[in-house]
Every structure is written in structure tokens, then in C-alpha cells.
Length: 282
Image 1 (tube, helix red, strand yellow):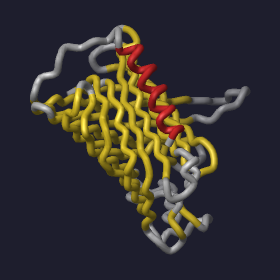
Image 2: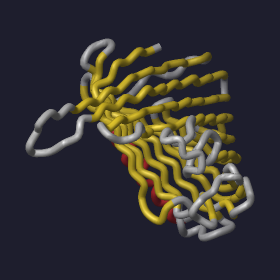
Image 3: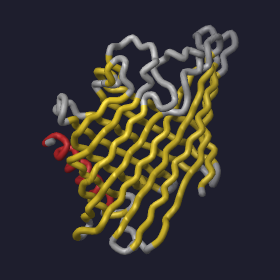
């Protein structure tokens, strides 16, 4: 718990420092909705290239949608993130390069100043099975799926800067028990079972800033400690999205994500997607 609070304080301190130059007008009651659909394309071609290289093409379709409600002392923030990408290397099977579906919902009742009594829900999974036809592979729709929820306290300066602390969080890990897997435990779920229940502390932070004209950076941080088993092993999920606008419809997009979850892999998992994007905002 001390590690969680230290990391939270560091995130809030850095974010508040940068936010001082990004003040906004006071929020008004009602819905605030914004979203972006993007398509990233990467392609390389080689023909008789002595230095080596394999022709490849990849594409990623993504959705990032926020719908937030402010009504008096109540605030309700929702974010939907979805992405699916494939890559094809010459002479190899088509593979997934990205696969993500996540919904974050955060309800708050003003307590004092920027503090709110809160309740949150986080759900994440992926869309598809492995594309090579191996149905016994490590992932498929709703396997694994992660559900977290619990009460807490929310510190919210604006829609672009907030931290939620939930010291009594329930977490449910869901898998397909019929999958044939090389591990005795799959994301912590024992062989032959389909769910795993955990209880612990969760801290989530969100910070979005304009680094310069037409360049924005979005930071999403989630920390979790399981009281019931190895509480010192903190699960970390950090995502950074940078959008560099070229014009209304074109941009260069960079997405970076790193995850630490010792029930899935003893080390950091990293994902990076960069490319020219075709964007539609709504």
C-alpha cells in the first residue's frame, strides 16, 4: 500500500506541475462527449534487397471515446478504448498486432474542494482468437477478461487530470477453462477453473496535456495490489498516447503500453504502435 501511495503522489505531483500552464474554464452541467476513430497503416517492401528484409504490411483500427456527465455535486466519467490490428509478413501467417477492448467508469460525489467520494468499474478483454487458427492459443474473446470495482476517493482537477484511490477493490479474472495451456495457472486462475477472485487496493490516474500546438499526450496509469496473495507485487498498467496532427484528418500517432502482472508473465510486457493515422473526430 505504501508503494501505491508513493507512485500516486509522484503521478499527481508531476501532473499538477504541468497542469499549471494548462488552466481551463470552470465546467458546466451536462454531458461532455468527445471521441476519435483512427486507422494506422505501416508498410515495407523489399525486392532483391541485398541488405535483407521481408515485405510486410500492418494496419490498426482504433476508437477512443469519452462521455462524461456533470450534474451539481455529481460527476460520472466514462472512457471506451478499442483497438484491433493485424500484420502480414511475406511468407508467414497473418498475426494480431493489437487487440484491446476496455471500459472505464468512475462515479463521484463531491466531498470538499477537488475531492469526491467515488465508485469505479474497469473492464478489459480482447476481441479475437489467435488468427493462425490455433484455438488452443493463450487468448480469445473474454479469455482472459478482467473486472475491477470498488469504492474510494477521487481527486479531480478537471476531465484531463484526475486520480482515484480505491483501497477496497474487488477483482475478478475470467478465463475459458477448456483451453489447453502449457501453464498450470493461467493469469492466476487454477487449471480446470474459469475464475479467480482477488481483493486489494487500486489506484488509477489520468492526465492529458497539449505538449505544443497540434501535439497532445494522454497518460493512463493503473496500479493494483492483491491483499490476499503477494501484496508487495504491484500490478502496473501504463499507456501513453501521442497524437501529432497534420491536418483535420491526418496525424502521426504513437501508442505505448507497458504491463507488469506476475500472474501472467514474470517481467514487463510492452506494446508500441506508431504510424500515419487517418482520423475522424466526433
